[in-house]
Length: 456
Image (tube, rainbow, N blue to C red; front, side, top):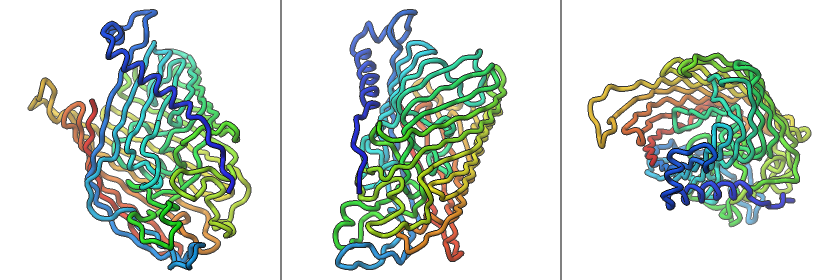
């Protein structure tokens, strides 16, 4: 298996630069004063935050005999598709450092570094525990969805950043099927946005493109192809997960591959205060799949390599090496009410699938009853419901270690977020995760998740 060469992590240097600048400002009282109230021509305004998330998780048990015999000796039993870590568990999933440098509205830099990274690690037991999730610099002003810019303008963003069609104001800690499959993780490269007046806009991107891999859409991604699987067939501590195809994390910048090109056009209307607005976006992306992409912690390769195992022919009927997506988004805000919807049509080497996702949420500000340290106790409550589905137009051509890649899925996430203090909140939610096996059998892989988030 030919691997892409490992390359420099240039976004790490950007993240460390922003972090170091923030730290220096805190140590230097003069710099700290400038950061608090910058004047024209002064240094950047520097801010950093720490955030942690702790969970109680209760996951259903799921097991399915796949009829796939792994190509190892001695000949083992058939592989099984298993829930990653069923039962009840308390866990700390992530510690996050966020750093921002603002010279003006037209020049900002941002970095987000995750430690532990339990829910994003793939494989769960051997994936990277430290991840530079975001690191970019932006020239020019970028309007938030469903808000009006002050005037026509443009921006250029370079680094590692969220895709422009991603929902960034999620109201639950879980992810829907569409947000997992297509835009859970940041991409790396450049993006240009142009405001054509206040209501029309266009966006263009040239990026590396996230490698195609697989994971469970619940909290834990699963273990697959870890070093334990090179031994006589084991009974691993963590299961494979019930897997779907998705765009995985970018660990290293690959400068010798084909760029992924994307573009979108949108229209938006909003009031001047930004409390009420609607935003419609049509977008598309295309790139050439790599022969293989190294995924740290597993002997499986990403992109085209994922569809074969050892010397086995392709497990799915693929044609060519193109990957493309076309879709549409809608953002709607009416005071405390919000709706986000997304539709995606995708082709991966001739494998077609469609995804649909919609989330309704309502933030309700609560009256002041109690205060702690001058801050309101229980300032808001925000219920949310999200529906998502994936419909696959392909089937396995032979016994497959991950037959769930071909199943049709439906997922309903429902929960509520309670603000405890302005910097502390608790989210309680339940995922009703249903799919239809190739033989027409309906199965579930449900999960309860509660999350305590603290930010300082």
